[in-house]
Length: 311
Image (tube, rainbow, N blue to C red):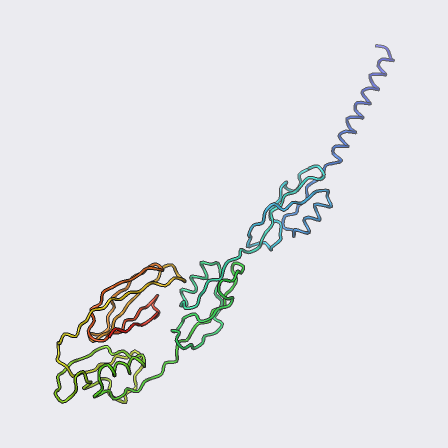
């Protein structure tokens, strides 16, 4: 091989190698390393990508209890990977804590309020205060903050105010002797006192259905709910029974299931006629056999819901 041809071959190889390395350098010059943007706030991550010749694209937002709202939680491609300039970097961004609706706690007791808040992802903080409230039984919610139906972040504390109930006042037993039974009942019912037992005894000197004796005696101090026994003029064992139909619909709201207890107080005394756990919206319809005037009480989850009178 002549020296001239050898020179041509060597020159050609040098040119080809030069072209190859120039192309490699040109291609690699357009590549960049993907930076780490996880854990950064969105604006900061966007600026970092732009400084490296990349474009940040927000792909989706998710609730994350551990990262502040607006923080990048994931990225694609991952950090350290070589990509061409101008490549889009897709990121997932935290929306912070999930938003939940505050339940209506009014009328619930302490345990029920705690369950409702827990089910909603909220917390009950130490009682803000306890207030006496006319018409609200003891330990029933009468106020809350935040208010019902507002949207708040999950784990938000809810301040709850419970009722101490009405201030109980003692009652001085009146002299009911000579009063008609209906009038005596009215007096006792007005003071939340239950006539738990009626005894009948015939007395020709007294009017029909008149009170002959009472226990406690007149002037004795008694508390609401205390047992009152009246002896009334009438034939013992006489048929004073009548029939009625009790109907009640379990109210909606609060817990999905509620314990319903129904008690009856008539001349035969105080007794429960129903005690079951029912779903909200269920209807109870029950025939009653009552001895004289009667008072029916309905309890929801051990708290008095309402009273009904049957004459």
